[in-house]
Length: 174
Ligand SMILES: Cc1cc2nc3c(=O)[nH]c(=O)nc-3n(C[C@H](O)[C@H](O)[C@H](O)COP(=O)(O)O)c2cc1C
Image 1 (cartoon, rainbow, N blue to C red):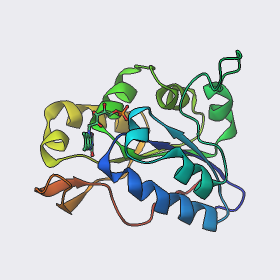
Image 2 (image 1 turned 135 degrees about the vertical axis):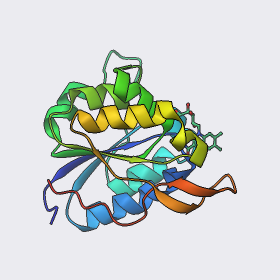
Image 3 (image 1 turned 120 degrees about the vertical axis):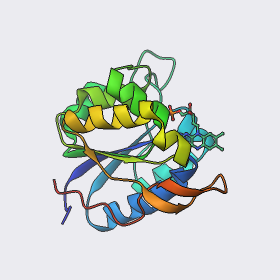
Image 4 (image 1 turned 90 degrees about the vertical axis):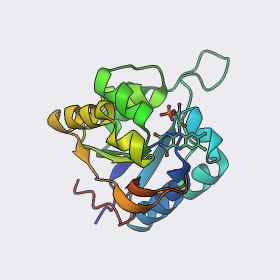
């Protein structure tokens, strides 16, 4: 069970972002405390209001919450969490993670993370099959991240193939 476990849920700009709502509900139902960190692009796909309501915590997206000098600490999040799950994870975020391009709150949190990191990629089949994406995935795997392999099936583009975010419930052993 996940009772009392602290989970950082990273959400990125994928059409699969709506599935994050179901993940949050499941994690909260199992007793976990969930802190959502969403990329600026992710907010185009799902609203912070929905995510904050489901997770029972304000959503973090920007470094600076207000213009009064206060800021969100990715370092504190990295120390707070028992696990980080990035679901859905775009090709762009995979690339940034694999190369340490820390230009948003989600990536800085990832780079600060002391706990196990689980990554659930979601993208169109050709983006997933591209050698750059495959290299990024391999690099992240070799660095100890757990990749939740995408599944086969009907994709949002209308195409069919591999790239769907895995729909079975994530088993976070933390
Ligand atoms: C309608 C739409 C759906 C998209 N879905 C995906 C997706 O499932 N996976 C992906 O890697 N990129 C997808 N993209 C592209 C990303 O949104 C884009 O690369 C963005 O910069 C990702 O930013 P982020 O990784 O910082 O959230 C989509 C773009 C659009 C317009």
